[in-house]
Length: 395
Image (cartoon, rainbow, N blue to C red):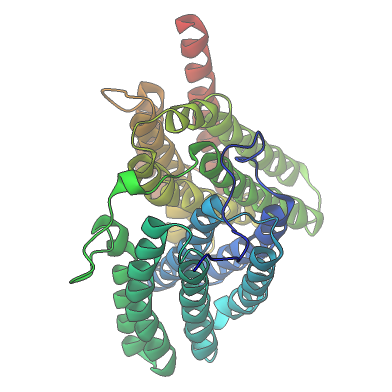
């Protein structure tokens, strides 16, 4: 019998098939709130325990977003059923983001249940609408649904538990979800996927991830402006404001000047775009976005107290230097993977080394928060300038 249902798959043959739809940008607005919640949660719990808990929540939020971006790579977001699915995910995303500050307290059940429902529900939706339309995608999403159902049990059980038990359940859930693509979603009797079967539209996925980087950088700008507006204006505060803004510009330049465009071109012309998308965009962008979030926390700390640290200042120092280091490391690995380099970019490696050299001086209290912020921003500017000049000369 012929299936008379209209297909919800993207029509790859059309000229605009790879464009990012407006509803996808609308969907991303929820994650502006999520990124803000994560940075504020880390700022309020700037300890080893708080950092690890925030990391666990960030891994969940990123995985939810990137899996949805993979889905809209195949499904047409301009079709009404797909739009409704995205709107439902937006509602869940708002609930999820609202629970982030208390996810390890009294809102753990909400976080766990909503997250599991969103992950499993979206995947089942794709499996249903691709049945009879795209055999490879249908079988792949059946496998994904089984993996996410297993992790979903852990998310819910963690929400119902307390203290260390909640952490253990959620660590297990994250481990299951992050191992699944690396294991090609292998399921007994159903076999495993192949990256060549993931006929990903490289340009679309590259643009989606670039937009998430913009979201994270935008949150950093919002933090800078809001914190500056609430401070008593003085020379150190104005200097901290300028340093924070220049640092954000340098981060944008390092990622977008040439790196994002060259990577998009590379994946669009790759023989196995699925493999590159899994590594470069699904996994390595974690470091990039995490670095931006930590940098936003560092900017807020510097603007609030440009002249002195709170207490010993060790946690603040790690955030102020570690954020740019994490960002540079992520971008270096991303460019290395996407541009067929034998080694990561020398400018980025040098930047990481220079940032690492700041730790002894900072821990010896030879540098104020403003001085550390100025030094890290200077390193980012040097990296951006170095790479720009090197690429121009190469051309």
